[in-house]
Image (cartoon, rainbow, N blue to C red; front, side, top):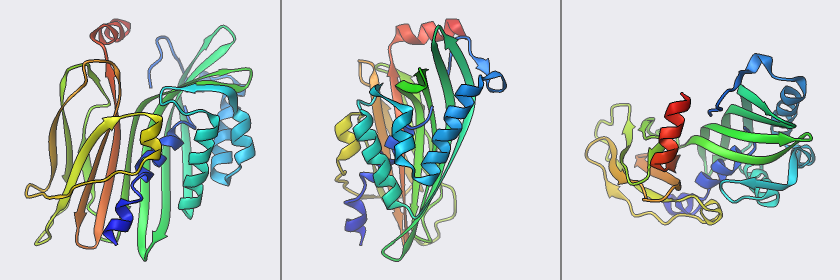
Length: 270
């Protein structure tokens, strides 16, 4: 049974793909309560379409020339969204507009999206929770670009799935060391924990390719890793799995790798 679950771990990146549906910091952003009606209406329509599995409306929101930092076009995005709909019996999307900015004829919006999902797999309950922050530009009523700024998802499988706390940055400088800790928050008793963690580049292939994982015994109540960011800017996936008797937990988090110049620029803006 474990092998069958592991073969489906492309679900981690599947969760990430849904993040591209929804719009973390603008230079001179206005608060959400001042947003124009056309922006709030667009986000409301997109949220409703996702909850109702209305693909026609979802497609209409996006420009055919959509560009994203993850390399997904409209076709790949909607394919992964449809796969998510088919995977979970129940899905709930909540979108909160954090701030917005007008740049000429273009609107730039940031949102926080919270996703909850539930399904049954081989007699086990599978619960998904994800929190996504992203920035999108909107022109002529369509989303034309999308940047994912932070993202974390957890998938709990089975009645005894470990509840975990994740300590990992959403952004680090190129070449910087960082911690990736996945800590079990409940007593484990006599249970034996097993698991592993991996890091990989965010590419369109990583959205579509399942992972092969080598599990190890975890004597310290979780996973504790020290990573080193690449020397060039980009994005990385941090993923982990923790297994105990009658339960397993999958974790995925995106880390943005920025240059020192970009970090200094952001600091000056703050």
